[in-house]
Length: 527
Image (tube, rainbow, N blue to C red; front, side, top):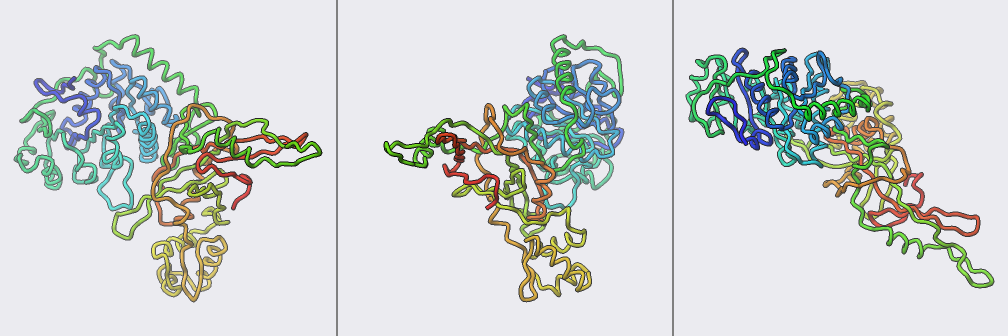
């Protein structure tokens, strides 16, 4: 199966859908036109994709194909639609998505949240799906930062999840080198700026005369990484940008799928928090859709829980010597937990170490090493800290231990103001003061170097707590690890076995967790 983009020029569809490619060319070079040609061909082949449309120029695809428009003029759905279910259906129904952010004031946040939701869905689905990013230099700029943005992460790690990436840009010198270096095929149109020509030189491996790029006309491209060699002109599009005359009829089946998708997603309503929500990637899980929830992989089954309960029955012997407490019922229950991946700077520029933290709905740290325990986080959170308090906390975190005099010089506050800030931080358990030195409270023991093993659960039973608030959980992690970046947040569940033991009219509930096979003495209280 080939994606035909010009007479005699075809690309293997698998390479397009799951590979890493780029379309580069200055304004007026025909860059977006070629992207439109590729999108039309994918529609004809029935292959799903999502275009990040920054100028509202791809909506005309709907004139000839069953394509879902999210955002922009005449949209099928608004940008505040829950992106997780949207991409889940786009993948399963095979319906392409145009994410029109041309009118959004928070386009970076919208794109971050949308692609993060896709990343989460594909981490489980692992079905081929292409992401096309227009003006990629705006969403993955060449800047120094502590963590990869979502476009960079898709370029580096998306392929194993089935996600392909096609980036389009006028300024290759401004796009992240992490992204450009991953592109092993692509098409370069007219370029005249020296920095941009230098940026694409590595893509051709020094085998192309870059001076020829400046003489190319609109619609003419020089390819790399595909069987065709030499320049070519993109073929004519079926649909024109921003409207056009329909030529290819949309099949009834395609229309039906698109209609079903719009009705289902419209019925769900907008995602909580709006489209410009937290940058941390989240997995939504409401009561109605927990059938696809992720669970901490259990090591002990219900049979073990029964044996455990029998060994822990309270034995009260009467005149006849009979046991008076007996198992009445054993059932499954679940505890909601936020699994958060964070990046902690190592001290080397741009390098961080990945760690994992788990929090319950009361923002207690959940530890699962030898036994499950719920550890109360510091009594103070970032919402109660002033801007200067947080600045002091971040400075201490960057050094781990620092002299008070040096700290005062770094943050530029008076000794009295610094004392007050340190008193508040120490009262909250975030730092400790001793011998004129300040030390960051050691939270590393409450984080994990590797993520816990997860499995998908077919159905959830009764929840023993409420679902975790992602914003509050991310905020608490930023307080516990001041210099860390929240990379990913996934809602998971832990199975416990809820056993009812009866002695006459007295009923005792025994909770046995499924990870270590230990009793949870009192889930309602912290350690």
